[in-house]
Length: 248
Image 1 (cartoon, rainbow, N blue to C red):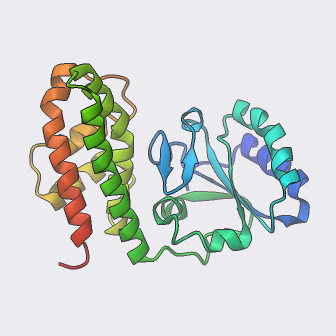
Image 2: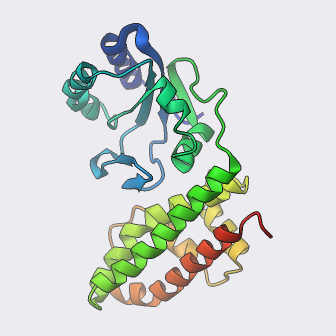
């Protein structure tokens, strides 16, 4: 169980019931800290300001423009109650999204709480091939982001420090996705980091150090300079590992 069904979640579900009526099929809550502080992995995005709220999704028969306007008027109250802006899916749209968003929906499938209605994931499954492909896309994107980012630092150590800190949470999310692909325990970030180090044959502890920075506000410039080469090498190794996963 991810979290207890709070009064705020119950009020949120009642709000959706008033808006969608009998079209509302289910409401579910998932991670208080869903992977990555800013997520834009394949299109399922939550803004930075939503990151610390309880995340929700709703499945409805269909969504109209009037529905969206009605929801928009209630978003400030939802935020004030500690809830992030919800994900809204039309039922048939949701069923066809599992292969498009394998990492995001796979993570929710693995750890969620039904607030009202049926469990939208009861008969859902993310195919292993889709999950592997999603991991590869995310890993390659992370590698390109780091390479681009280090160029944009202009050689400044303080900018490199910021790059590392800001990329730590997405990196931790990536490692969770790879661990989930392999059926490993993803409940503890430190354990996930050590799992990755074993799989990649890395003994310098860089992965664990980067994961520990998820949620940090700063990193000493000299430490960033020393840490980055190993970090980049670890991501390169991860890309190669995921690319070859299942073919060994």
